[in-house]
Image (tube, rainbow, N blue to C red):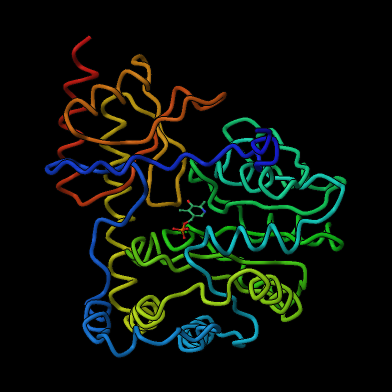
Length: 352
Ligand SMILES: *Cc1c(COP(=O)(O)O)cnc(C)c1O
């Protein structure tokens, strides 16, 4: 009865709540408040029994080619997966096989230490500087790889392209992964560095800026040898990762650039408006380039605010973790949702 000794020991990632109740305001997992482009619904209507009978194209060629066209790279420089979590997991498995620790910021996407644990990759979490700043100089140190979310999560703070370049240029013997899950909300993509550096991987997702979290589409761009290495690992594990519906829906989304830029612009406007309104209620926030704000109140503890919002069926994210346990991460919803949030907050922080 010792078989349990041979189970893989892991500490799983804890995703944000997905409450089933109706009439809630859900600002806790950075989903887009707007529906995807109407092109997506049309593409999904085309999915009948006929195209689900067969296995999907293991290379997801239709989607890969559409991405190559949209981002101006070769199809051989693109790898797609079931959400960027799948792509990031594959990147860890493929590129992080050194005895030296990989590096990532101490405050960042909490999946990074989870994959490191799952794949037995040694890591060192690098402390942030004053004001949650990532200092590129801290990543010029011995390492077996680097992963940085840019903009960072949950702070929303972005590094400039030249700051990222400092990290990539000083680590020619390591793969540097830049996780750009939130880049479309006002930061600058480091895609422009791909021609210059063959050790760089740019990861993006359709979950946030393209309103398609439910379809699970992520991708990365890199030099051809890195993409080939990722494909070898993927085909050693599961050839058919992306289903037919996601391939077609993803392609359709890429064909509606106007809708994409319009919804991103709306979210950025709502973010800046919300930031100003929160200031009036004595909240301060980081300079977020993402579709969320990372805020703290001058008097009322974040945990109390979180719980009181929850009672009012407004869900935001609270992290009971060192350095950030007096902060809330608030996803930018529609203007109406943010108005309801502000009314509730006014009540909560005014009560004392
Ligand atoms: C949301 C998120 C992801 C993963 O999103 P997918 O839905 O798996 O594409 C990856 N990195 C960061 C920093 C995120 O916030």
